[in-house]
Image (cartoon, rainbow, N blue to C red; front, side, top):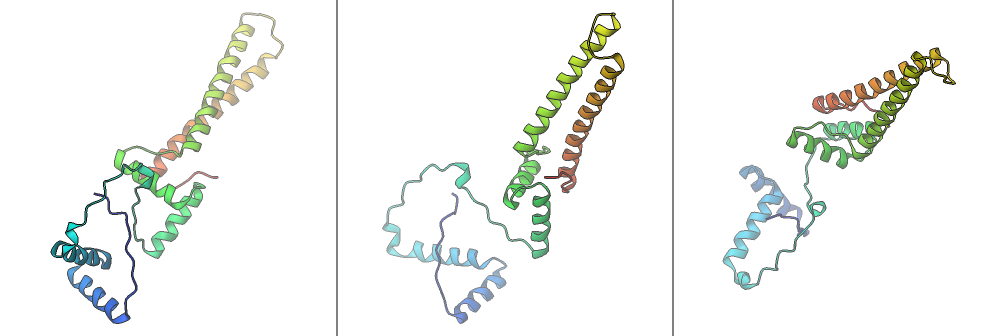
Length: 182
C-alpha cells in the first residue's frame, strides 16, 4: 500500500522536542513515529468502524518518492542535472532507472536527436559511397572524385564521433558524471 496522503498539524515546541527525542531514541524519523502513533490510536479506538475508501487505480506519475539529501549532495545533484539540461528530479529518475534496470540511460530527447544524426550520417555515407563507385566505373558524375572522397571521410568521421558520444554517455552514467552539453 502506497502511503502518499499527508496529515499535518501544528504542535508546541515542547511537543515537537518530545517527538524528536523519542524518534531519535527509536532511530526512526519523526514522520515514522507519528505514523506509528496514529496507527496504534486508530487500532485501539472506535474509528476502525469507519469504512475504508476503495483504492483507486493510480498511474505511475502519481506515485512519489521523497528523499532527504545532504546540502552538498543536493548541490552536486543540481550541477549534474544542469549539465544535462534537465530538472534534478528527472535526472534522479533516469539515474535510478539506470541503476535498477542495469542500462545506461539517455534522456528521450538526447537519444532521439543522436539516433537521427547517426541515421542521417549513415545515409549520407551510403549515397557518397554510391557516387564514389560510379566514379570508379568511369560513369559521368558531377562532383569530382576528390570532393566525394573528402565528403565520405567527413561523413564517416561524424558518424564515428556521434557513436563515441553515445559511448561516452553510457560511461558517464556508469560513473555518475554528466559529460554532455545542453
